[in-house]
Length: 111
Length: 114
Image 1 (cartoon, chains in turn red, brown):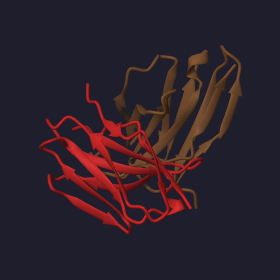
Image 2 (tube, chains in turn yellow, orange):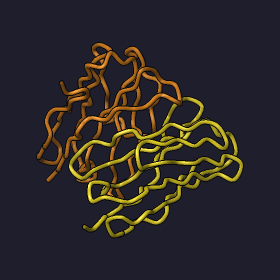
Image 3 (cartoon, one colour):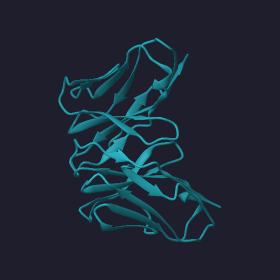
């Protein structure tokens, strides 16, 4: 059974702080890792899809790295803004395209 | 303009009833999914259809039956509803069933069984 773990479960930061959180997954038989951003009362929205060891992806102030050999991915937010407050989900894709989601990291950015 | 839509948004019903949740996508995608957000807030896959064909069928009670009349629609029918079925159900779609394809989620349907 594939297990995807995210830490921390929740995070409170001040506006302007930079922050990062972790997604851990089994390193064997890796196919792809997805990051999603989920605002309260909205649908999860895709941020990144990562496939190669050493991958780095960036979208504005948000970036992600991938280490498939040790089984982790980091999501970084530079200069957090209140609008970054959301739950950030990672999901491991199996060979058949099924996504196994972590529980998410709930980020709260205070003005 | 809504890409993936679900109806209804809220559904309150009595135990034992049969209910359906509808999902439609206007993205031209081939693959659609149903997820259940459990009590610990995990999103867990229930079913997936690719071009109207069932490709993922997780360990879900037989009371849950997905139906895909065409590739733009994937409905979820639930028979003999139980208290434990209360959850938020999300529909999603992707261009195909590949592991690198982004999934686009609907707004969710909050089901409450009394």
